[in-house]
Length: 266
Ligand SMILES: NC(=O)c1ccc[n+]([C@@H]2O[C@H](COP(=O)([O-])OP(=O)(O)OC[C@H]3O[C@@H](n4cnc5c(N)ncnc54)[C@H](OP(=O)(O)O)[C@@H]3O)[C@@H](O)[C@H]2O)c1
Image 1 (cartoon, rainbow, N blue to C red):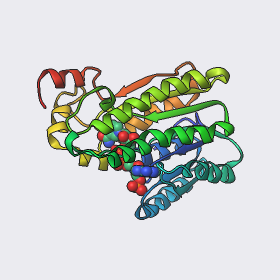
Image 2 (image 1 turned 180 degrees about the horizontal axis):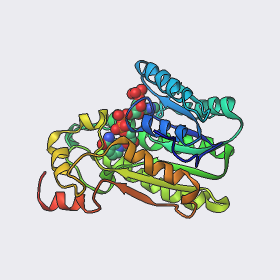
Image 3 (image 1 turned 30 degrees about the vertical axis):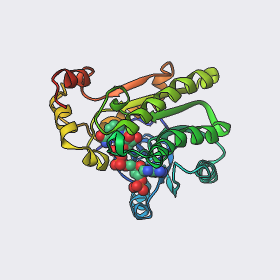
Image 4 (image 1 turned 180 degrees about the vertical axis):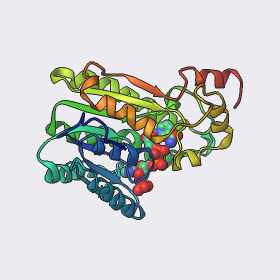
């Protein structure tokens, strides 16, 4: 297959949570389009997946490189470590930040603890805030920040209150960051996937995801990680210079969530 257009040639990107799932596909896709990439992961067991990803990138004909670091997004010191390895590897500038790392906890309200709250919010909200803060001094204008939200941010799902509300908070950060960072052309956007094939989707109960799939206009199917990466590449590239503060639903149907609730599938 011929390589995609080199719309990101010479860029430097960070993608959090990219040892597997959507993040790994986004990272590889950015590299294919010409960007060097630093990816993060959390579990020691995921290191080998990042090694494989780096090896795959090293075989690309465009000469891009991928480095990786174990950095828990929920921990305050991680952000500086991620920026340090990125700048040491690729020079003192960063063009693209994709805040992708996230976790979900499936738990009823009455069983939800403060520890659960801290875990989800520190990973899904505080992590993106701290990494954005650490990247800003190195952000080469016009920078691109892309936060990975979820359709769950604007839909109520049983037992997913922490996850859904953390994504709503991330969308709030997105709009405020966009207002704050736009002066020199930096854009900040979010993409909100519907259900996409991944380990995280495997954790979502069938009673939530099957009706969601059946209510999806486009082929009544789950999304593929590459379909998320395609939109991220657009937002990261020069064609999206006038798009900022937006949340782009990537769910195969603008009305899918509405239909799903109206049919009382849950
Ligand atoms: N899949 C879906 O249906 C779906 C739908 C809507 C939105 N999303 C969003 O899309 C993004 C990616 O989801 P996914 O389905 O690809 O997830 P996934 O398969 O569960 O992968 C999660 C990735 O995040 C990393 N990670 C988890 N906690 C971390 C932490 N504290 N610090 C650093 N990295 C961490 C994991 O690293 P390890 O391998 O080391 O654990 C892994 O690389 C998330 O923001 C998710 O909310 C997904």
